[in-house]
Image (cartoon, rainbow, N blue to C red; front, side):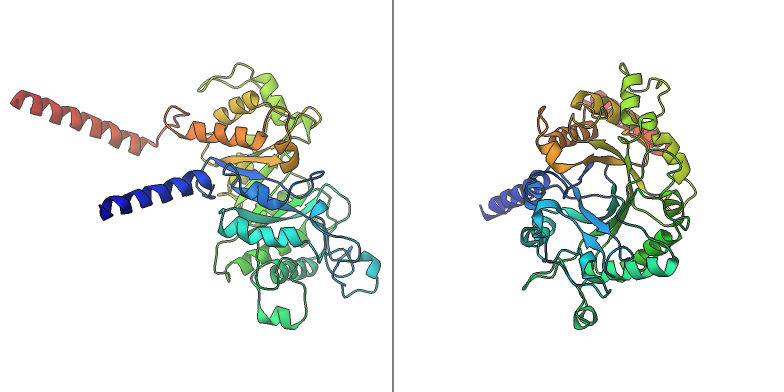
Length: 391
């Protein structure tokens, strides 16, 4: 009786982990990344972490960099911080530029629950679509990386002794993010040398951590991206969230419009969609092993770039079997939650998982594996034949 109860408990736990909580798997093709932090009237982070259909949550933004701030970067997480005078005083001479938020109580409480209870990867996003940031010079890039690591990475006694900020720590909890996301949409004055030095330095810091950190990038769909191409080429990124919604000529919408009757294994009609071009570009670079995510907007109010569940299903089906396909990224959480057609991120996740199981997309196995499977099936038929004759 006790052994049956033990088996029941194990099965219940496995079911709980599988269906109650999404856990990021770097090798999976069904990951869903959901941007959070800039939605109007957004719900707190914990709400989205509680959704089993979400795996990665980039939160943003660090939208002011130290050279434009008062020596510290600035942060903006929408309605989740008190703002105003609740900022860390920077080391520079102009307090009016202090923008690093020091009081975001719900966010601070939510991050460790998201990570430890719900298994989400929380990635700190840098940059965004504003003109409030800029980085130039390798030395400034390395210094910025050191600050981010000290403020948002593993807590160290040296950092605390210097009185430097730890924005996500609480009185009794130390909080570190799971990685950093580069969403650089402003041209750099030094051909990305500062960003290259910054990302390289973060990579060095990752090797000292007790857990695996993730480096992600969110370039535009044009190849080569003018603001991030050299950075992605020279520094190892783990995930590339390509934004297929800002630039008409290479957008996901273009693919859908051109391939209304696409069938698996059929030829795609010319459309400008750059997934394959991105794959070719990454080959031979430091980010050759990065997973590509198709980035889409979360609701119909996205200037014509939105894809309905039926439309994105066709697109995912066409690219699901690509070796470097990792999933879908959605901008952003609040619009996806309030989508008039239904909760968009849940619909997209269900499409991804549907293609991964029996009856979904059957990705062709490598030749050696398929040959082995065929040999196994032949041998099984022979054994069954022998057994039948003996009877």
